[in-house]
Length: 250
Image (tube, rainbow, N blue to C red; front, side):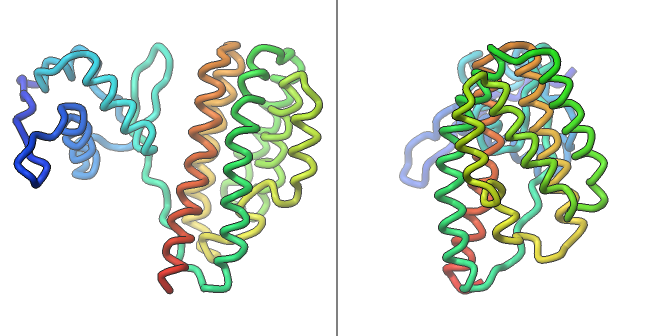
């Protein structure tokens, strides 16, 4: 059992103390970055973290929430929090990519609002047959990990299936109308033919899809909404980073 390691006061650079939540999340992030906590490892329980850092349950939960929002961990109901593999860094893009990137970024922002609610409704209205269809799509997607260029169709099918599961045909109609612009990678290649980086990226997508699917299967609308929002928010952040790099001229 780890010995207690109370969080010691830090500073903001202006003589003030950093909030406890930030200090705890930074320490956990450092443990991840240094390999003490590796991808797939389960984080200590809330009680263990409270004892380690000498903080309240609220502080621990806020720190975990911060790490989850940044895409460094995932939480699984009844199992705890797990470290995620790093998201592959996009290749440097040309200035000519700025226009398409700006357009796709706006599209993803619309999708976050639209698809998050569709996922929540899917958890409430999905049928066993639809869940079977979603599983078949996920299986087909998993089979393309070694051939990343063939995966876009299955990725798009997953999102359209969730929209249909909502029970509101307008969700599927709206998403279908966005095709073929539904997926950012059909418009802009962030990985410039780097097959390994693409495969790592697709494994991350597959894991995020599984979180959405599991929440829908459990009929948990709030978790389904949050899982879809997190999934699309990760896409938005990758695009935002690539756009900033392109604007700065690489």
